[in-house]
Length: 256
Length: 258
Image (cartoon, rainbow over all chains, first blue to last red; front, side, top):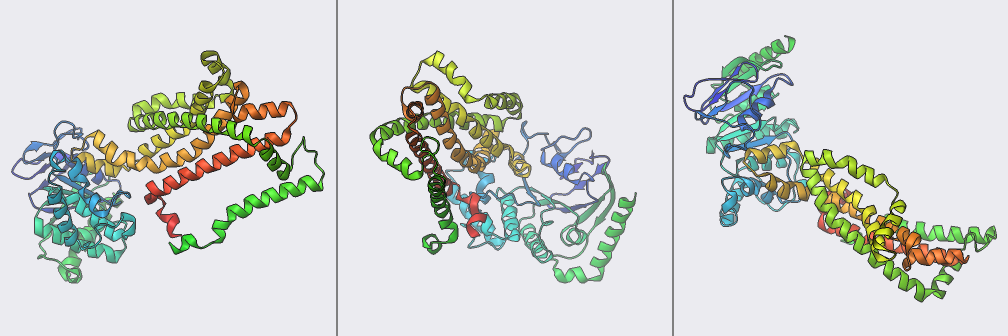
């Protein structure tokens, strides 16, 4: 697979070719176990593809980070995995403490980093919760904090693996908005893996449907709906039609 | 804070149960006229405790320090080996069978060997306390490290975090509740180790005292000794339980809200 720039398109997982523009918001939907998460691991450099290539700006992504992978990736998962012994603010700062790019200067620039973390927490609506322990936050608030942690080091690429799947429907819709706002402000590139077709349609510029394992891209669909999208958007005809089409493709690959 | 001052049934329960046990014991001894050399009543035991006070105090003090020394060794080596074992799957699989095998050896069986090596006295007792309390610490710390969420490790590795950073910032703090839980168990086991060694091959300490008392049928003194050891064990357990609450209170949030 390829990402950013004109590096050319290459396969991942089975025969999946994705070409993602810088600053684009891409959603990946498909049945369970279709290799969506594997694909994210390859993009993040945590796993290496057996064949084919993953490139960022034309540069090969190293498997297993050891050989100079890039620090410019942020990740968030279904489970917020906050560290319970750290305050919310300290949790958000964690990537800066360990990231190759910032760990050497972390202490010196701590005030600056704290400022950045506070700003980020404010954007996601967690102002005033900086010093709370994670277990004092609701699931939705923890997931907001998790997004902050994924973005604190200003990554160019944000990888989201079903980040809202464990939340109730209303909280989930709130967080779509939080994520959309963050993205509109900062314009990082996003790959969102999800089972929720409305979520994909709401957030993405482009939706890919993957087949059952071994995962292949069976359908690609740009989403032209104007931004910022709101809950109202989800009741519009275009949106409903898009979700319907996605649903048909999912039914097809599930039946196959 | 208010709730900590109020005497709730849960807070009273341990006292009621303990006092109840002693009343039951006393009543049974009197009711069935159990001879003192079979099972002395608590009143006789306490009488012996007072009568032999100086000797008990002297030996209890000795046992206490020997136990703490062995336990301290167990904490240092247990923590170190636990971290190494938990951090590396290779070390884990290499060492674990050895640890389990070693832990399965009855410690009473190694005391004679220790005596051959170090002579009768303090060193075998310290080492027995060490060997018996070492295992739960290693296992708990290693477990705490090994159960690190893979997602979180991925997040950090994707940032180019070093293994050591992940270990120190996430793994070790995460394993601390396991560590403290093991300390409570380990310290009581350490008393067991010390007393075993003193009983088999000692010239001082509670084990030695009780063996001497038993051989001259002063059974109330034996029970006084058991009581003192139990109290020391409960005391140390309570101290580590308190330390646990203070230092890794974040692991108890469910229990505190309840």
